Every structure is written in structure tokens, then in C-alpha cells.
Amino acid sequence: MCGIVGYVGPRPVQSLLISGLRRLEYRGYDSAGVAIVEGSGIDVIRKAGRIAELEAELAGRSGQGTTGIGHTRWATHGAPNTINAHPHRDCSQNVAVAHNGIIENWSNLKAELIESGHVFQSDTDTEVVAHLIEDMADLPLEESVRAVMRRAEGALALAVVRSDEPDLIVGARRGSPLVVGLGDGENFLASDIPAFLEYTRRMAVLDDDRIVAVRPEGVTVTDLDGAVVEPATREIEWDLESAEKGGFPDFMLKEIFEQPGAIRDTLRGRFDSDGLVRLRELDLDLETARSFNKVFVIACGTSYHAAMMAKYAIERWTRLPVEIDIASEFRYRDPVLDDKTLVIGISQSGETLDTLAAVRYAHAQGTTLIAVTNVVDSALSRESDAVLYTRAGPEIGVAATKTFTTQLVAMQLLALWLAHARGSLDDAVIQNAVTAMSLLPDQVEQALTQSDQIREMSEQWADRRDFFFLGRSAAFPVAMEGALKLKEIAYVRAEGYPAGEMKHGPIALIEEGVVVVGVATNSHVKGKMLSNMEEMRARAATIVLVLTEGDAEGEAVADEVIFVPWAPELLSPVTAVVPLQLLAYWLAKKRGLDVDKPRNLAKTVTVE
Ligand code: AGP
Image (tube, rainbow, N blue to C red; front, side):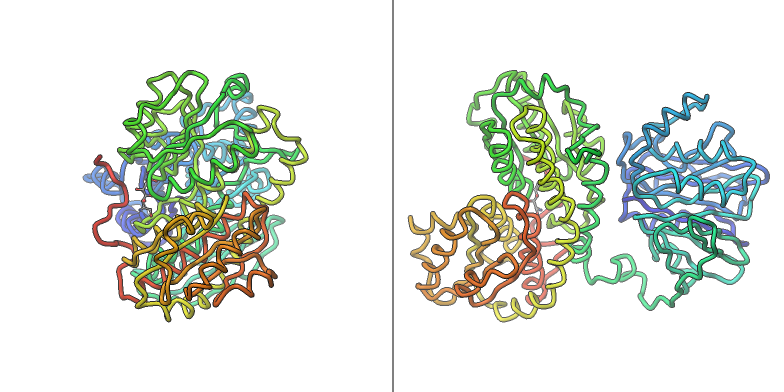
């Protein structure tokens, strides 16, 4: 997730780009840059860090250009430094490109371009676009961008300027957002509305596989064959604050609803044409992958719940024994580690001190360390032997939502990859799991359609003080996460517990007024789970069940049900957790709380 802004018109573009980028900083903030058309050339100024750093770099610059593009980055390929900051240029420096998305076939394109003499400056996938356009210097810019869109695979939102067409920005969109702001004698291009809302309230919506030529006097939208397409236009009624939240009342709800896209991005390019898992960036040789005799997964908070799910997946698919550890406990218990141990550290921020300290301790014993994180070049990724990135984009709400579901998906990918490397699963089994994984974004989308129903349901429990979240097997981590969400944003006591363990003590707490939320999605222990829920019901608790669509047997046990689409047992946590996020969200809202900034919490905990 990155932010793009572009402007053509009479105004000096530099300050306009900076204010637009500030409005998009929620989309990414590890580096930023602008490309401004000045006379017969293009000035490109880029800087690692937040927009303020770029602004300082631009202070005192004398250019007065009125056409330009800007970019704020959330790294997916290449470290977040100045060299990898966008816009990127070709060898001749006549082309500048800002990109949001992931070009899946970039390494093939890059190899081909290097072979034909192009020299690359950055480690990004984006730079291939600038060099491809350079090779089509005799075509109108619009045509060359169209040709790039035909060759590039994956998700692309592009903004491109070329020095010989100074009053033109060409944009293109597939999979990543891009909207056009329609002004009077001036026009805008951006990843999101807030970037231009100060200047115009009229916008044009771009569909996928559209090319847009943006000039001061107007915009032309065409398809991949060059046919002109009339875009839908509309007036924006949001104020700036709601525009930054995409029309949602809070970042948390926006991020809950971003999960289908975040999961899609996390899966993108990670399956090969044989239907197996391909983790090119993992950079671990097969011999190493085959040498492991045990696995530790270490994390905190929500990331620890992803670790819990990973234990089920890795053990079942690879037959390697897995231990999971809360990071702040790990190094104080003298764990047994050696050079045959694989350690996986999960942290959305990659900066959680407890997790860093734990994995450093493990790494120092000669283990192999894999990081699963959302932040490129975070401390965790720098210190690891290999990194698997979740691609959720920045998460602003303190409560982890989209980073959690993408962690689940990343760990499922990693488990399948290990299973293939070690030969512990037949290809057909992996292919089936891959097919099921590719359905997850749409299934999560479907689960989200119940938001209003969950709001209405939860309103009746606004004053309840005791909640239990129960699950068995792979649904147990989901229950743990549901309880954590409720605690942290609604300030309600909630226990996450393995359903079968309730009878050994906690069942003494069950009485009328207690809400018991059970996760009873597809599982080989679903029957046992439903029996456990009957035990809760017999003690007069209010029973809420998350069930697989069409589960009449489960429905009969519950006071309220929330259905999610069917998924194989080890994948079902991804959809099953979504209603629990919404339940916590709506209960917190009903209680009038600030869900984005819950009390006493920090997004990243950098103290022990
Ligand atoms: C999740 O909602 C919490 N805010 C918190 O538990 C968080 O998951 C934990 O602090 C770990 O953070 P990390 O993933 O950045 O390491």
C-alpha cells in the first residue's frame, strides 16, 4: 500500500504535491518523493522517512513547475531507503514513474531489460516500468503505458510523466486504487480522495485495466485496446476527516474492511503455475529447510495468536514438532535450541522489543530465524535469515485486524512451503489447499456483509460484563483473538479458552448473564465443540456461535449465530475471526469508546 498523487494545471505543483502526500501518509510512510516537470527536464527529489523529511529536502528549491507526481511508500520490494523511494526513472532520465502495487513478473522483465543494456538504480519492481517506457520513446506516452499494462502482471496503479509531454500525466490502474480529481483548468490523479479534496469535490472513478491521460484541459480514459471509455463521475460529499478514513467512522473499521484486499495482496505472486506455493523472497535453500527437526514460533499479543494457529498448520502439514512461545517468557525458560531448530518470529511492526529480544536470544544459539512481518526493513526483518512479508499496508488502529488475518495467511503459506520442501505432503494436497486459499479474500468479503447484523446483535450486550470466547483445535486461537479484541477496545472482561478445558474449572463462572461466544466452524472436533457449548447453555449462558454456512446442528445450540463460508479446517480461522473483530468493534462503539486509540495501549511496544 502506497500513496500516489499527481497534478497538471496552472498552480506551482511542489507544495500541492506535498500537501497531497501528507493526506495520503496513512497509506505508507517509509520514504517519499516527487517528480516535477521543469522546462525540458524532470526534477526528481526523494527522501527516506516521512513526508516532513522530503519537505525539508525541498526547502529552498527554486523550480516553479506546474506538472508533477508524488509518492509516499510502504515498501514491498527493496529496503525503505532513498534509492528505492519513488518516483523511479529510466536511463535517459526522461521518464518518472510512481507505482502502488506489486508487479509479479518484475524479475523476468528486469532480467530482459538488463540484457538489452538498461542500468537499474533501485531494488524495486517499479523501476522496470520506467525502463520499459524508455524503450518506447517514439510512441505517445499514453500508448507506452498501455503497452506496459499489457506486459505487467499483478497489481498496478501508475502515474507517469515524460519530459517531451510536459502537460500530461498518464495514469493506469489494475487492482490498486487510483481516482481522478476533476478541476477547472486543472486535474488531479491520486490513490485516494483526500489528496485533492482541498481543490475539487468532483471525481472520476477508474475501473481496472484503464489508462487515463490527465491534462489541464481534461481527462481521457481508455481501455487496454485504446478504446475511449466514459468514466463514472461523482460529487464527493465527505469532509476531509471522513475521506481519510475512506468514509468509515474509524481506522479500525476501515482496516477490518480492507482485509479482503490485504489477504489478496499477501497471496499475490506466491503460487506457481503448478498450483504450489512459491516464496521466492524467502531465500532459504531446500537443504536447510529439510534439516530442521523442530520449530519455535515466537510472538506477542495478536501475533502470538497467529503463532498458535501456525502450530496446528505446521505440525499437521510438515510433521515437525512446534513449540509456541510468548516472547516475553521465551528466553527466561532456557529453551533447548540448536542449529537444527527453525525459529519463526511474528510481529506486524517488526519492532516489538519482547519479540526482538527473544529471537535474538534464539538466533545466537545457531538457529535459523525467519521473520513474518508487515514492515520491510524493520529490526526483525534485518536480523533474520529470511523474511516473509505480510502485505497489509500500514495499520493505524491500535487493535490489530488486517495484520492478523494476513499473518494467518502468511503462516499457512509458510507451512505449505515447508511441507513441499520436506516432502511431507503430496502435491495434490498442497494444490487443494492453494485453491482454497485463493478463495479466502472473497470469503472474508462475504463475512463482512454481516457487519450490520453483528452491530444489532451486540447492542443487546452493551452492559454485560463477562464474556467467554471458546474454540477447539485451530479455532482456539480465533477464540483467544476474539477475547483480546474485546478486552482491548471495549474494556470488557473476556476470557479466551479451549472449550474442552472449561469443565476443569472455569465452568464455575458460567451463569445467566455471561455471554459465551463459540467458534464452531468446520473442524474434525466440531461435534465435541458443540457438546461443550451445550454445557454452557445448560448453565444459562447466552450462546453465540460462529458457524459454517448451513450448519443447522450448530444453530440449534445457539441463541445467536453468525455464519461464515466453508473453508478447510486449517484455513477457517481467517474467516472465523472477522465476526469477532466486528463484535468487539460494535460493542466498543455502543459503549462510546475511541476504538482507534484504546486506553493504556501503544501500537508498537518497545519496552520490556
Ligand atoms: C493487538 O491488537 C495488540 N495491539 C497487541 O497485542 C499486538 O499484537 C502486540 O503488541 C504485538 O505487536 P507486533 O505484532 O507489532 O509485534
